[in-house]
Length: 135
Image: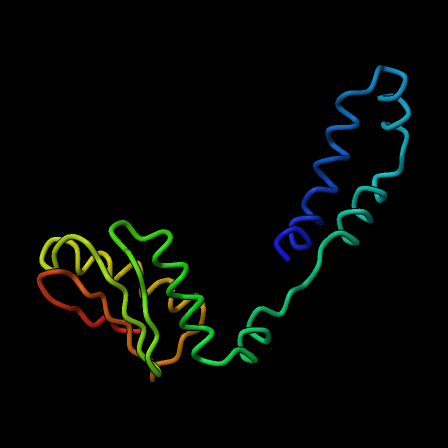
């Protein structure tokens, strides 16, 4: 799926690379091409993706699982995660006092980007205590 979304971006880049690598005769021919050809290629390559519509059809458990996978993969100190009902708990290294606020801020941003509802709870479980992030 990622490849299909990136394909439209590859077409203009490929065209630029091909025109930059040609000899002068090829460059002169490219200069004579109508300007609307590039615009036509760019327009046909762009694809609208209804992300909100796609996320609306995903149940909360799957959405929280995806959020847990993402956060545990990128948030420094994040380890395993568990989904129980509408609660996502992520096991963290470090301490609540030193890392809690910053980690919650990053996790909240990810939750907002995915459109996680207000009825869900995001808990970061540090060795010295838990912190409940506002989603």
